Length: 118
Image: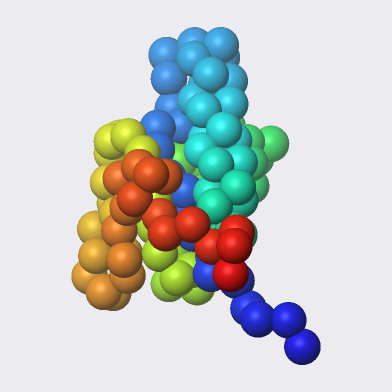
């Protein structure tokens, strides 16, 4: 049986004033997730899990910011560590939760030990 790989929760800004800004933030999260994979870990990129659900006009329903934050916060305990590559209100909430759970916190992929040769 293959050794289980650690799952790194990748977090940073999602929201932006424009659709283009949101797409840039999603792309940046994808790039950070790719770097995590290149280091030999599984990357959980919540931006990809919520992008087709988030509706800014939904202020209290299942597709609201807060509902989707609860979804991403529920994933943090299931991960082995968190990578906070940039601050935002939501990313900082995920970071504080991971910290309170004693999860390792990384701020750059260069801090992740390389697991590709193991």
